[in-house]
Length: 204
Image 1 (cartoon, one colour):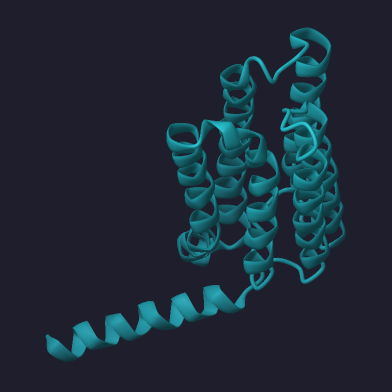
Image 2: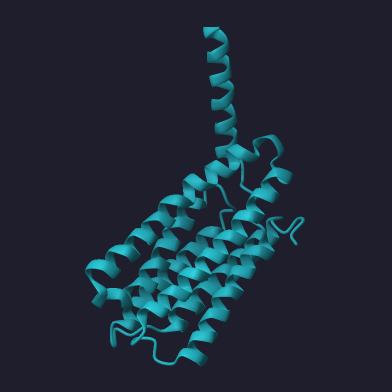
């Protein structure tokens, strides 16, 4: 019985190692592009309808958090569906491997937002830029399971976040464009990379 348990543990370890060394194809190009369109729609809506958002920061961030949840839902559903089709028996290991890569960034972004909102609301203007920096760092980490060219998108998010912080520092205001445009460009670029890498197979 002990030998059987050890053999099963070895099989699990081998499958996990194979999953780590295999390019993750669970992200669909069309779905990733759709998340960029969501960012554009939210930015346009805020700019055209809501006016001065600096006086209503809670509404500004509520809309972006809602957009983030929508994007996570779209990507999550598509990732599970594609992984089970493209990675077959390794699907579960590949999905968990991807979660391990992206979860720290998502968790850090959520915690950062909560802490700033609770203890330093005067610094809320920094959150869009900081979130983009975290997105860049997350994609750098994910480049080991995604096509290597994803590092260019990671660099874009990092530079866009830093540029956004520099631009917003003059007024400490909230701009939908400093939030929406970097994500629209970044997600669109990521979608193109996935498309050329074969990530569009079977996209809806």
